[in-house]
Length: 289
Image (cartoon, rainbow, N blue to C red; front, side, top):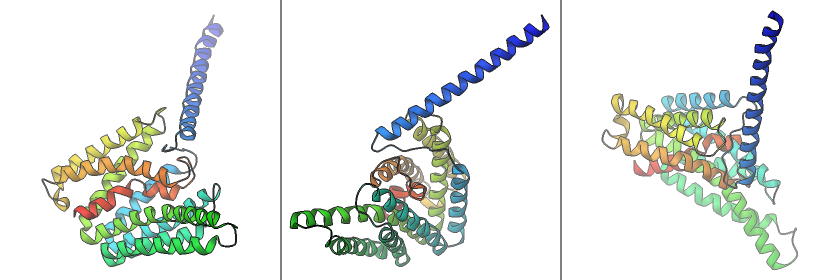
């Protein structure tokens, strides 16, 4: 009787564990299928030290913002360069791309913020011109007809621009924001970090594309409420809720924009994913301030 009774609960526990494992595997397959089938999907891969890297990035960005805007420019600019390398590499699997050129141009755009918002705008224009020139000289020997050459030039220029400029603008705008108002930059970093934490923690276990961003927005709202009560100054007391709402809107849209930058939403570009929530939020905060 004792042996039979022991075997019963043990068998039940084993079946429960097997059911949980099967459910986790099913949800994982559903998530991966969604990433593959949706062009603008936002993946939540859990392999590797994802949480550690995310926390390290948030801590480093916060420390840099507290120190000085050049420190934040150096940190964000380095991430933009790596994002350019990874994005260019992702595109090279589908079409002609040069990841080294993309990385250089992303760094140039970000570095333009050293001269303020005007410098950032000039750097963007120079990057676009450089991309066109690089494309014009880079495909000369690869095609025969004029139409093929024109299409190849435009395609290479497009890939180079979309792979370099967004990451550079995100990094440069974050530094330019810190130059305008270090408190505003720090506030944005904390708000976006709260969003990314909630989004990742819930999104990794979700079988749909909605729960993660909703959790991120809720997390951001909780932190924003704390800022509003105790530290609303950098963004103006009455205007702060509007800035917080803008950050909550721009964070998930920025993630989708990063997927649009890549050849596929699930393409490997972790450095770009460090900046994706800032792609729209940082430039808009700079413009509004």
